[in-house]
Image (cartoon, rainbow, N blue to C red; front, side, top):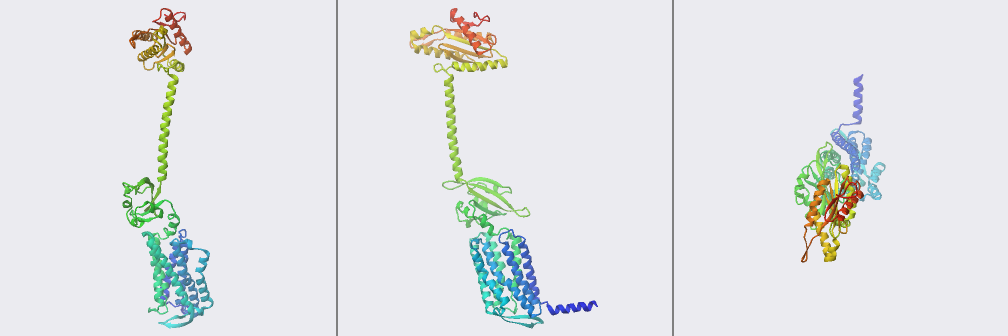
Length: 555
């Protein structure tokens, strides 16, 4: 029972379908086109992929329906699939033109009115095929040839109108690709070539078919070539990253950048230059396309090859222009999906203006630094003037008040003694009265120099007022201080001060006190030294007196 049933089903299928070689060839071509369209649809994030996917789907409908025209037996079914085929026939040329406009970054051409105009003819032709088919096909008949039932179509006037219109649209797209490739770099020129290669084969076979210079009567070879187109598109997608680096993205990003951009391949060859980069180059950008980046940048950088490593690098370069121009150069490696480096992106930013601002800022900072130094010097001079005696250049009483208190605090903290010597010039008024105030000033200066020369590092001498001086000696005992005071007294006594034809000589009286024995505060210590000086002056002058503990006399 099973065998007769299978034989019955087989006979029924043979009544409906025939395995014509053309149908098998067309089906294979349609399936290849379908496979490529699925690949494109999976990459819909890439600009241009949406229209390309629709176009490939239309080509699949064209080829698949045409395969069924050759497969089915009944004339009514053949005619149905012929009309279904025209959905792809009328849409493919228009979609190809739109796709071409997209990949050549002519999006500005797209307006609602123009898009609508492009679809007027396809919609009208499809309506004619379905509802008034005699305007497209004068007659349709079924004939038997080589054991196969085929459909013989006598073409009508609108068939040729649509054919010539489709050829015109496709040739217009070819012209746009040709013009764009003339101004494109090598990389994008290769992409345009793949589009041409994938599309010119079906067009050429279609023209060949319509001129009937073939042996395949009633077979349109264009759908057969769709599989070849699909293979070319698939090769471009997988081998040359057709959908990833489509020029639309370049137009929106790189073309409008104000920074100069170089794109180089994994061998270091320049494959793209944006318009902003042309302002930095000495030659026409086309001169650099295909050249190694080291050769192009050798006049800009000493070792440009060192910048081409697998790490992102950044440096500043000076262009050999007059006037000089400065660029910030950033090199960024580019990687594919498998994290293999397949090129580099080099971005150049003109920082000449910033450099000028930085130079002006440095000059301003230098001037400011100089002014600050000058102000510091002036402040030091003012402070010196505030703490120095103008005549003798010794510290003044104000400095003594500030410093002695600080030295006493340090002596108390570090537990060491401090001695002061207060001295007064004996009979100084006689010098002024006899030789004049100029001679008196000379004596004061000479005495100041003598005391300063015999002071230790760390001692300081002040003019206390009039002809009185104070010598402060930190970290010294009273016995050593007394010996130093006696030595200083003796040197002053033997000091000869030339003044005209005279040699002036003076003597001094000195009072010596020390911390902490004679006072723990500044006031107490100065008071003790002053009392010792008073004792020295009222017991004959020209001597050194040390303050006594009973504070009534000095020894």
